[in-house]
Length: 401
Image 1 (cartoon, rainbow, N blue to C red):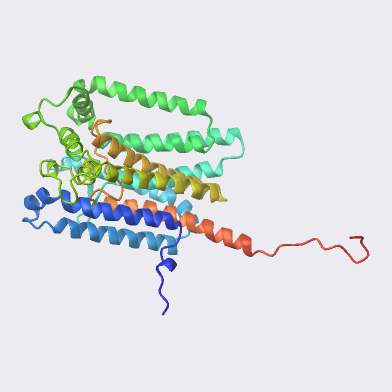
Image 2 (image 1 turned 60 degrees about the vertical axis):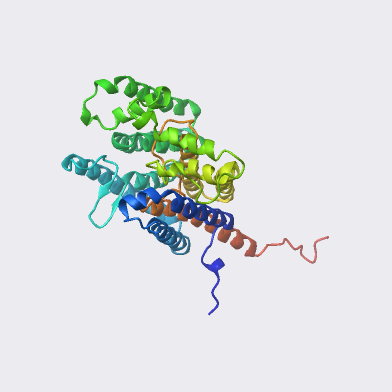
């Protein structure tokens, strides 16, 4: 039996390579940054979370291989409305569960007993599929684009509004990515300006009214506190040191070209989210600016390959779907990096495919699998065009040459 990885790992080979390097970075940093967590929750077994991360990454690669080999791209267009309904139900179920269970800290996750996941992760995928479908069908006239804008804005604002209750940063990430996607889809800028201004006004209103809103108003108080902590510092932090301060300390201590080396992080022993929200700071502490730049370059390569896939697509739906998912992944990575280096307030956004995760890793794998499926479809279309016989206009014998 002739077995070849090339027959399974179809689609853009460069994206597969990027994923391999991101996986290696994830395993190295997760193992290094989970020592404290292992002693607190895994009986001191420092290899527990490494093995856990390996398992989820391998399952993720399996998910990507399944999607690129089995599921046709047109299936995503068909299933988009159904996924959207499932997303809304999951989001409301998570809020109801939060209200009924006082021990649950936030309405971000939905516990189904056998599995727990964040419905916002499902929303990223389902919304991008729906938006790509709507934009892809309405590209002929300005009136079509206007109708597409109304549909996209209505659905996106509704779902992002539900997410906003429990996860403001993810709501803003999804909404911002959709706005950029509509710009790519040639929706007039004058139409896009209104929701942008409205979004900024909403954020401003939430910030200045948060102290006067009741506790059931969602995460508005946390939103204001994080901005205040970013601007003024956190007076309530233990010893006056916040997680963001520890992140900057990690970058300072590993601020050379090559850092402290693998496993050399000391700051991760004091950080609650060293393996997740602030993982980029630990990368720089251990691998220096060389490691930090290398990780950033991998996401820029992903962005570039996304552009290549979009340009090679001969249909609008696959092109917009790829663009939307790539934007989400890259923007999320940029936010994680910006928070770690102290440019943005703390947002709670993990680094895609690098931060330690469970179901979030699998949702990221689905996004990558869809992107790779579109690239593989482009390759098949290109081969079919090349194999089509070329019709040559041969003159008749009586006709002069």
